[in-house]
Length: 141
Image (tube, rainbow, N blue to C red; front, side, top):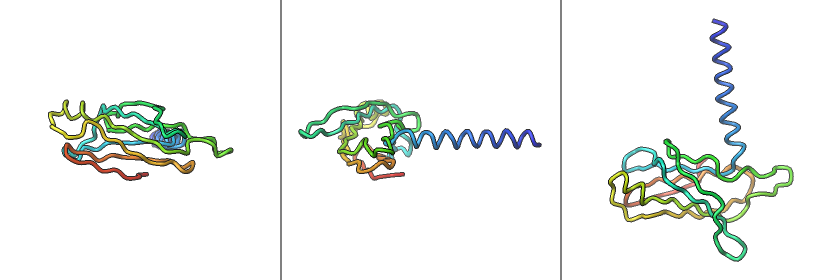
């Protein structure tokens, strides 16, 4: 019994530590939920851009959503001692055409762009709810 309890505590601590580590290392995450199917949108390419002082967009990262429709590792967490880091205007470009083609859906959206501003050192989660004929976004947690 004691052995089971010890294994349970180690497992729970390991899971908790991984969750805390993942949330503390990266400042930006996203996910896509296909509300037409009620399932996460897996293997969707997402590009992250940052707007420079001239108003141009520079790509800073690119990734694919995982099987849960998530990307958890955009933008390393800024240095909290100096408060320097990731403040600025960003754009997530969700490349949805291939996803819709693979799933046999006819969509009017070849891609979706979401522009937002990071203003501090807190975590930003920018999800996308998506269907073939509409989408929505918000700041999540």
